[in-house]
Length: 407
Image (cartoon, rainbow, N blue to C red; front, side, top):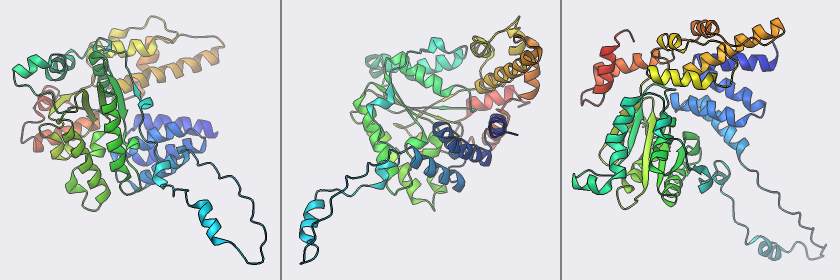
């Protein structure tokens, strides 16, 4: 098997088992060897989101960030001093290097966030297929008060604090956050754990402070913290990691500062594991509003399938049949089904020597290979709802699980 074929097989295995951390790290290493550093960093970031303290993933993160960092230019060669019978002139040498600052190694590991990292999205909530319940909740809990600050003030509704999106992986939390920025006409700053975590002491806290400062300069701005559970882990679980505890404390401090005159910065967080977050992050003024983002409903599944098939040759696709057979599939799962079916149609076309378009049969065959990735998440969620929902934080999730007992 060629190296590229092996890598393709491993990438397919990752898509089928996205929570397999050793596999993710191995794939990241192979991608790094092929100079596909950005893709490697994405896999490493996902691995750390699943297991933030995994030694192999942390070592890979260090390797990748070092490779991605700009290398300092070599100083111009200084001509050797003229030979002197009195020996080397130390005073003159000290004067020559007196104005050279000692570089901080952390400065070359992760670039400081700048305004170039911030975008102005054009997507709106109307571009999100289906998911009407999510849109209504967003409008009532977040967008409505932001659009009508005077009316919100009259009802005593605070605009401080953030919104936490949670649910199974691959269900569109990032796209929804970008659409929120579009609705508000605000800038969008997407921050992942690789933008924050740093192996040098104090550097992660500095990165967080710079990120929030950049968002304030770009206001109005939606600051989106992806995989926020990796940045805001329960401090009781970090007794042996003072660096991560300090990172959580810095995040709490930055969230608190948003209520003190930093108008125009709206913080959204996304997580697959809200139960792993430090409870202090869920207090008023921080992530005090939550929104459950479940697998796409039928209209959303139809829109996702049509989007992923739009530029592929197709013939008489029965979208309704596919929608009925893909309940509980995430958006990422649906995209993977289309990709798998396209591979089968491509293989058939090469064998026949002429193009054969995708058919419903190809997609149904792909369905037998691609199972919904949300199952393990719902299994964990059911345990949390059963034993850990003491304050009612997950009542909406509990209602969904009661309705779908086979999950």
